[in-house]
Length: 126
Image 1 (cartoon, rainbow, N blue to C red):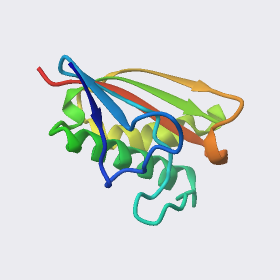
Image 2: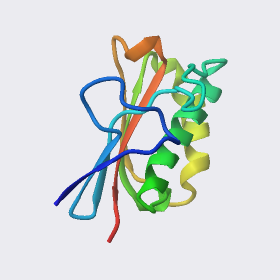
Image 3: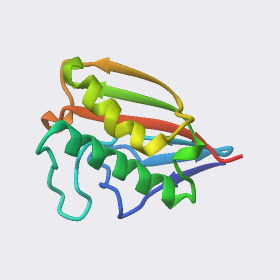
């Protein structure tokens, strides 16, 4: 069974996609960017602030299905510039603790709304 996830505590989808889908205990999120769900404005003061907002948005999606970061098994990080890698890692690590998920981080030519970081994840509720 496939269930669509929606929470007002994360930015609404801005296209023909869902915030996340749950299938057989797996949560697949769409990529999150640094949109503040309350104001609809981007939070791009610096890369650390931008990454923190992305992670808080992902946290809200996880919480909408009674999950947390300990259940995340895979993430994908898209960066506008690999020069941000260390700063993004620093913020990202704060959310995962000692057992981070599998992951890749890639530099891309462009991201929605001109942001510098977008992250998606897969989690399992077993």
